[in-house]
Length: 108
Image 1 (cartoon, rainbow, N blue to C red):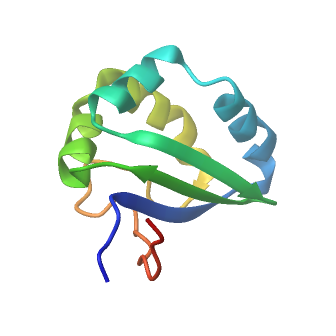
Image 2 (image 1 turned 120 degrees about the horizontal axis):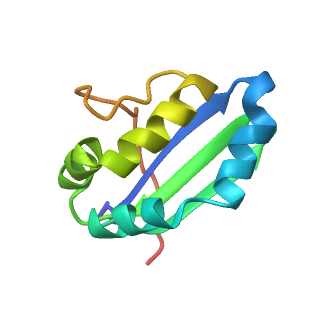
């Protein structure tokens, strides 16, 4: 199967932080949006099911994008705010900050 340029994962958000996490994403910082675009991330969507969130974006070079984000002052500031809300790792300086989901179907 030919894979798309999509990258997806899920995270659970701590119940006590759920409202704040959603609010941050309903009204994201414009600088964060710019940094993600500069990193090469496009068509980024986040879907919510209770406290579980599904993240999906397209990117030609995910490793380069994550490296860019790890060096971004704006992204590190955002991550410092939201990392305590996530159940799991949120540190883009780690070897594998996000456990990607395997793509098993792609309709072009």
